[in-house]
Structures are given as C-alpha cells and as structure tokens.
Amino acid sequence: MKKIGGYGVALALGLLACEGPPNEPSTAALSQSLIVSQELAPSDGMAFDHFCSVAVSGDLALLGAQGRAPHGALYGFARSGASWVQEGSALLPPATTTGFILGEALAISGNTAVAGGDNLAIAYTHQSGGWVQQGEPFVNPVSTGISLFGGALGLEGDTALVASPYSDTLRGRVYVFTRSGTSWSQQPDYLVG
Image (cartoon, rainbow, N blue to C red; front, side, top):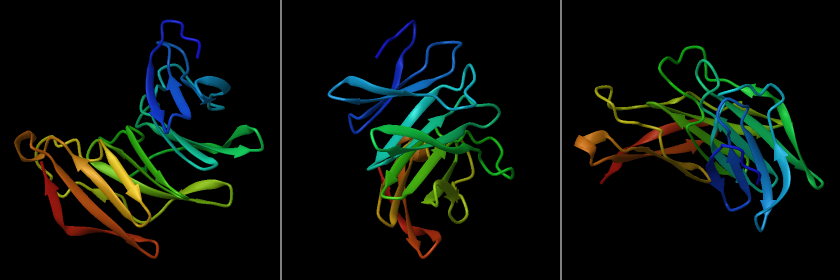
C-alpha cells in the first residue's frame, strides 16, 4: 500500500486495510497476502473523512469515516466478481442523535453490522444492495460522565457486545444486546473489567 505522509488506521481479517493521508480523502485497499488488489474510495470522499474502522464479512465490507462532517458516516461495499463496488451513498447517523460520531467502531456478522461511536451504537442489516438501520439505536445505559460506550464492538449472529471502557472509574463495562426478529434489547447483565 502506497503511503505518502499517511498512516494506516484499521485492519479487518487481514483482508482490508485503510489509510488516510493528512488533508486528503481516505482510501481503503483490499489485499490478499499484503498485495493490494484494489483501492477503495467513497464516491463523495472529502479531505479529513479519515476511515478509522473496517468490517468485512464474506462479500460485504463497511468502512467507517469518523471525520465525515458533521457526525461521521459509513460506506458499504460489495464484492462483484473480482472487484469491490460501493453500494449507495454514505450512511449517516439519525438526525435525532447529537454528540455522536458514527463509524468509530464496527463489527459485522453475515449481513448484520453494528456501528458505534461516542455513547451510541446502531445496528444495520444488508438488504437489496444496501445497508439499512435495524431497530432503535443502542443507548448508553449510564448517562453521566464519559464512558466511550460504543467505542469497541463485537457481533456474532443475534448477539452484540458494546464496550464502555471508561465506565466504573475506568474499569470498563461490556453490555450485551440481543436481537429478536428486527428488534434489539439490552440484557440485564453486563461484564465489568
């Protein structure tokens, strides 16, 4: 991957590496054995978009651009033969969210993904050539202080893990959310660091 004053910021399954040179649109490169096979850039990419998270599952990839003004964005790509093609325009956070940066963290399992940021996480499903939000956003259950809820995520099937590393005086918590149909709900128990 060619670097010109840039830096790599995310890596998923050893297949997709992202980098963003300062003051230039971010790009992602899909590679096999560290040989670049294709470089990805969103059709509306701008300076300071900064891809910071990547998630890949089979022929689907999501890229998080936390620098996308004003609240971050997600870009979906799908493999078509030997190439990766952008699906639709940028996914933006719901208008009702404030103080949230979409795409700081991503997790994907099959055709389901969870994107997180500052004190919020959102589930998406891949349908008919694009990603759509599924259910209500996962809200930080502890509304006081800085917790970084959504800054790290895990997803397997119908279970999502949402980390809150600054909770409990920096001991951290991991919350469990489960899906039933198209709805997600927080489970009563959580893990403490």
